[in-house]
Length: 317
Ligand SMILES: Cc1cc2nc3c(=O)[nH]c(=O)nc-3n(C[C@H](O)[C@H](O)[C@H](O)COP(=O)(O)O)c2cc1C
Image 1 (cartoon, rainbow, N blue to C red):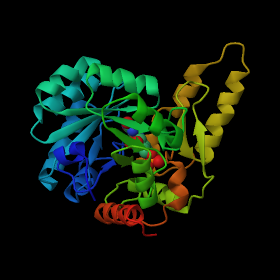
Image 2 (image 1 turned 45 degrees about the vertical axis):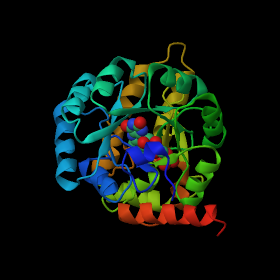
Image 3 (image 1 turned 135 degrees about the horizontal axis):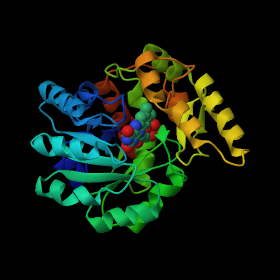
């Protein structure tokens, strides 16, 4: 498969990033993806700097290939995480960022020759990221698992491609070679997948969470948190339904109690990933859950997706 200069500069065999998922994407998952020729990305989420440092060490011990770290800019530990990344600039090739504007860190990353690739959900944000000097953007549609924007991947990606000169990576609703081939058609240079890697053999999520993704159908996800302003795509379960019920109740109050919602949601991804508890855990997953039916090693996922895309792009089926 012909790779773009960005993908070549990252030393990849496949133009496929594994999303830096909070609580899920640890050093082991990222190293498995990187070793197999994709870009593994550790999800820092809200973890303190020392926890992220330990995961970087783990990834370093498991692979010789470069990998990335996703910095959640709203995390209270974002500054510490950035320091940890800069101290590991020999191995951390890429920083992806979620939830905000990474401009205050950009010059440090540039000095360290770390590529900065923010996740964007709109043309305006993509343009702003290009202006501040980002190396590329990940345009993520609302089909994706986890925190989402408003536009779909199909509508967002080509509009971002038209709006910026920097490379665009497509994310959200991409789970197989058809998705990768389609992303190329929309003008993207590669894809980021989260949901498909949730059920990788090397993913540490609780068996209940994995089973729920593998059993999901096309309409098994719903969006919670819209009322509080941080929409998130999750599998339907008791937690999701209880949360929506509370959102509706609070919306009817003259003075909605956002703290109540905050309290219910707080720690819910940890309760999904570690405890596998469908009553209180948010099983974040994307709309493509309905086509993910098998737990496979990361290397197999990458090879399968790339091979299917290659066939389609060269006229096969
Ligand atoms: C459980 C889960 C946690 C996620 N956490 C983060 C995160 O911390 N930071 C981020 O930028 N994206 C996060 N994402 C988004 C993924 O990195 C990726 O962009 C997305 O899953 C792609 O869409 P897909 O799920 O349809 O493959 C998360 C996704 C999931 C499913």
